[in-house]
Image (cartoon, rainbow, N blue to C red):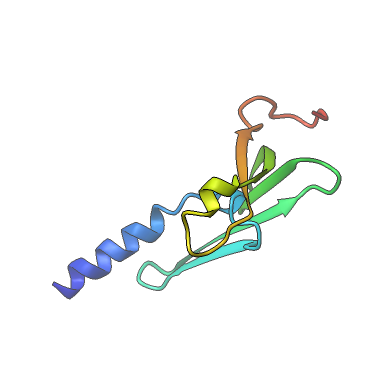
Length: 107
């Protein structure tokens, strides 16, 4: 039973998608150290200054994403129905650039 739980947990960590870093603004890297298989995966987020482009790096693989974010004010009739007041929320969309342009041209 314990071995099954350990295997299930290991598989769950292997299912973590690096693009998760696109939407967790304060998180800059994820390190997964699998001691059973003696392996380590490091995913890093790099924001390109002055652009809406984010790079997700994993070893020698770099994925580029174009990010569009919009801050939206929550209408008063919505906030009135909740105990905690939320004044605004942010909506974000990410578009993969690595499938569009895989060379060094500027986008």
